[in-house]
Image (cartoon, rainbow, N blue to C red; front, side, top):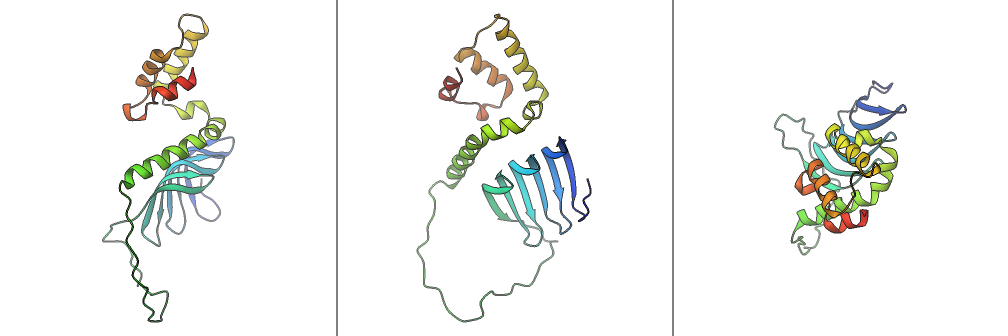
Length: 183
């Protein structure tokens, strides 16, 4: 879709709105690649800021970056603007103590997981089920529910573990506590 302002969107649509995975390339060179819900950025996505040569990768909530990593892109061919100081006076800031996180990757991982959990209810309501899962995951779910509804199977902790093991990588699988909540 090419918009009147010359922005270009390539991706999935649902009910005439951007929904699912898509790429938005803006006229100014900015670029978003990730997930959309009801025409808003939602979930995993990355945004390249052309003028700043910076990239944000992380979780988006209601069209805003929520948590992730913001870095400068290393590109020798990138257009460089001259660096102009924002302040021209010669005031020198006093020395500040340096602060460091002991385990920044863990802090970011927990923050992103918390955002996913907080937004899960919203995302489930607005993302069509066939877009939330791969065709194989969707078929596994359909068969599992069909078997349970016909009384041929029952759902217990072991059957849930088996189902999620078929559907997801090991690092994405829910904990036993999370599975217990489902029962």
